[in-house]
Amino acid sequence: MTALQERGKPTLESPWSRLDRLFDEWMRTMPMRRLLGEAPGEAVIRVDEYRDDDTQVIRAELPGIDPDRDVRLTVSGGMLRIDAERRVEERTEEKGYTRRELRYGSFSRTLPLAEGATEDDITAGYKDGVLEIRVPVASAEVRNEPRKIRVEHG
Image (cartoon, rainbow, N blue to C red; front, side):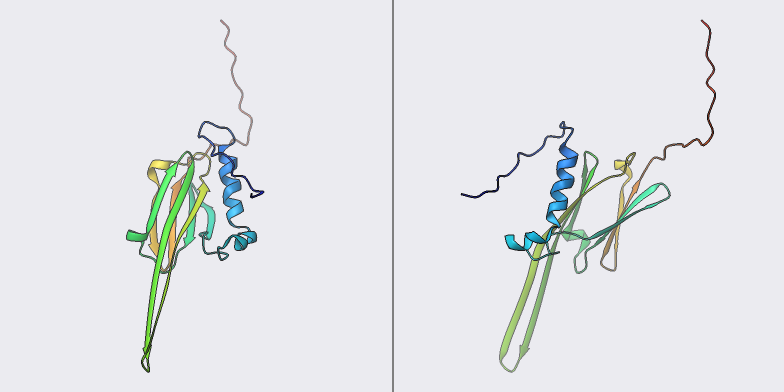
């Protein structure tokens, strides 16, 4: 009998569902995953995230893939999910010996979108092994000076 128990999947209505997804994503990056049979870094897509004016930019490292065939992007409930699959085949023949080395695997990453993100206008591009996702974010107007509010008599 195992000492670990799988937690129930959170529902979208749960106020803790987003926190659960973030925790699960964090756990995927932990070195202890090596004990479970996965090589470190093989199951998690590495990303850079930053803000470019009113746009959240996510750059994912995905070398050696065909973005048209091997990448799937989905967005739901304020979360962006990147699924990718890599297939690499090498064949070497010399002096009567043939060696074929196949490497393949599925990768995924789920990331929270910034507050005010516009899910319908997300764009993505792929160049030189990097997938760049641009998410428009509505900027909240920040006032530095107090504004006087008139009180009506009525």
